[in-house]
Structure formats: C-alpha cells, structure tokens
Image (cartoon, rainbow, N blue to C red):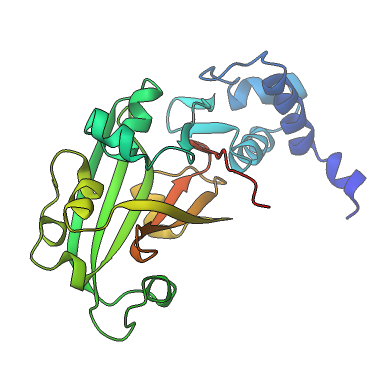
Length: 258
C-alpha cells in the first residue's frame, strides 16, 4: 500500500486531525480527548476505527490511555540533565545534595531515590573496559537506583564501582551514603571527580525498564553511559542511566577544543 493510500485510512485521518489539534493546543496537556463513541460519531466510523486512531497517538507518545477514564494529552514537563555542572564539586559542597537531587531542586521538583539493590558482581564488558577491571569475576560493586521526580519514576541508574575502591566503605553496603551522596564518599577515598565522559544513545525500553519506569507504549528511552574520572585521570565509577525520553532532556554547555 502506498503512502497516500495509508494516509486515507479512516483511523489515520482521525489521528491526523487529533494530532493537529494537540499541536495547535486546542487540546492542552492533561486534557481528555473525545471518547471513542464521540469520535466515531464525529467521523462517521466504527468505534474500533476510533480506537485504532487513539492507539496511533499513544504509540507516538502523544497521549496516555487510562483504563475506564479515556485518553489524555500527555503532559511534557521534562527533568533536564544539566551536563555542564551536575557533577560540580562546588554545588555538592554548598548544597550537600547528590547531582540528581540538586537538579530536581533547581527545577522546582521533589526528588526521591530508591536503592533496591547493592552487591558485588561481575560487570558488563563495556563497563569493565571503561573501569579497567576484569569482566570474568566479581570485580565491582553494583548499586541500582530508581529516581523519582514529584513521585513519578523518571530514570534508572546502575552504578559500578571497582571493588578495590568500594571494599570496606558504605559504597559497598549502604543505600544512604550521607551528605553529598556517593561523590563525597569517593572524595574521602581519594577520588575527586574532575572530568566526566557521557556516551548517549536512544532505544526502545526493555520489559523490566518498562515496568520500573511505568513507560507508556511508544515511548523510547535515553541511555547515558557515564564515566567519572578522578584527578589522576583514572576512571573510578561508571553509571548506566536509562531515562524516559518523554520525561527527560539533556542540556550540555561544553568548551570547544582547539
């Protein structure tokens, strides 16, 4: 079937009209769209056709479908990852907050972090390569974090720390690591973050990520592979962040090298 023919499908015509109304802000974030019955009557189609149209918009990430209540225009209020200063030692010392909590505070959001898992483990190969540790033995401590902004899950972060650094410290055992979070504990152990490398990709979420982050259909994730580098040029931690693309944005202000 050609593109023009696909565009003439009744469900696509309804979806196109609703999309235009959303983009024109006739329907605003949080507004309820007309019901399937109302859409079917307006466009003189079957309710199944109207349901297919709503499904197309849901797959595009424009609407949320709530069982028994209807379809609502998705609110877009992303957490912005401020790459230029999120790991600032000055900000951490002045606020006593972790990077995520400091970002949330600056953006008027309430932060919460759950740590469902801490343990010694064998690292993934890409993590082992960046840390310079073995990938065939439990050479790292893994800390799994689930981040919430205003009680909505927005990202997963899995941090890997060489066992030679974490052994005997709260980094290897405790969910709460104290004022300044893990970067203050790293500094106490002789590893002050002076540089960060962040490799950014996008993909569709895996099943466990969909559940943990309550990701609606059609919404991709941003994956940030962060490597913290200390004053001696040594990589001392790697964190894989998986972020809902509809609830997160990236903002980097970087110097240009000669």
